[in-house]
Image 1 (tube, one colour):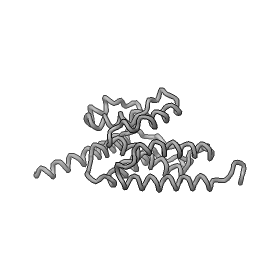
Image 2 (image 1 turned 45 degrees about the vertical axis):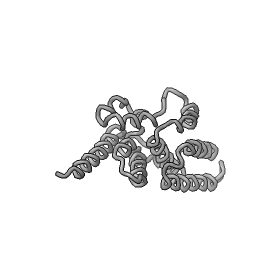
Image 3 (image 1 turned 30 degrees about the vertical axis):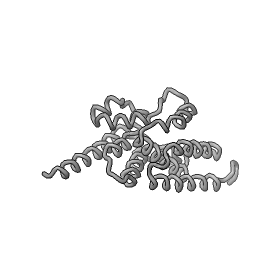
Image 4 (image 1 turned 180 degrees about the vertical axis):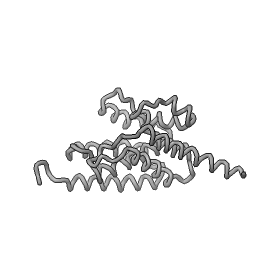
Length: 195
């Protein structure tokens, strides 16, 4: 087997292993959208956004995209991710994982304030994550979120993205499109009590 073929095989194996692992640990979880979409769809979208936007293939970053919510939303630890997927994947997941012991507002503030300190790969991952979140906000907003809460989340995503911009033109454009769609969806929402 040629060296290139072996490397390609190993990269494909890493990404597919991460996808399967994520599917198992997030089994039964749903997103906040009104329709209750399977959580794995978000992970798949983030991984797909990165895989398509990167100028140079980065299997570890795409694997981290599949795993980026595992520490926050499951019982999986960073050590477990490192033992299965290696130190770089674990490090990327750790960089984008929030401390769930903090209130949501504090986690959001910390994301905004610290995003510029993260590695370039982690910032790309965070930007893809926000694109996916904005698409859901536009197409299938969380149940019970009024227009004010949706606008607040759009502003939060925009503030985080500000620290991620300029690294990848394709992701910057996708973010702008997703933010515009979310803003339009919010603006076109019926007023409370209307209907």
